[in-house]
Length: 273
Image (cartoon, rainbow, N blue to C red; front, side, top):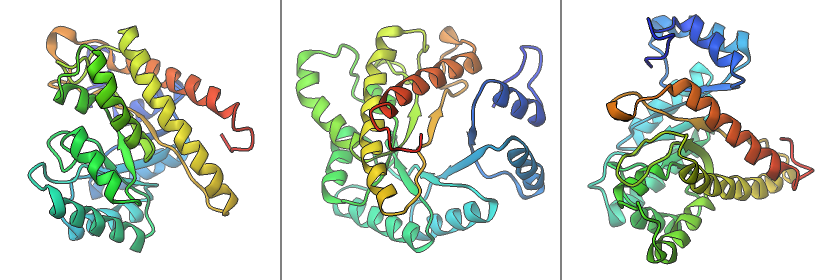
């Protein structure tokens, strides 16, 4: 959304061309309107892009409709921001269990995103879901928990209390949405090297956990894929005072992810990386 050359937004065809030139291999987005799906499908196939999608299910019926639409369009996985942050405790566990059953029924990879304002509102409650639900798979976006918890100083007490919970969530990583937060804004420039290093450690740990599990999946004859989404949103995610070239910064995120992945894959020589 909003990407272009400064004078105008690129056309859909131009966006696909620029995405390919930058070395990306897939797109994450909403399923296109029915009248545009043919064009999207042709472009995805022409460029050999993978495609993942997401939605905002509040119940199993919502997710069933989303999964069916995703399968029909040819999406490879579905990411859910589960509605809403006022569903807690046993009600939340029941809903997440029902969503997992629905995804298995339709044989579609399904990940729940760590997102504020959703059922995964904060670090503590999401950690409790992970502890209670062995099958829960997550899309990791810790920018929401850094800003939600105002974790701007990385103080010793933060390291002691929060880091084990972050690690617990990372053990369920099935996808990553990459964005940096400084604890005051949810999205800041990728040029902030200390923050990039901090988030990179989490991303690397999530990748490592996934690769270890992927080796087991491979041994069982199952295929697996790991989506890493460079998710830099337009305004109001990016404050006007901090606006930068989102596309250029997305490329920097991609390059960091590729470096992390290559380093880990060199330790997992039998994986198909």
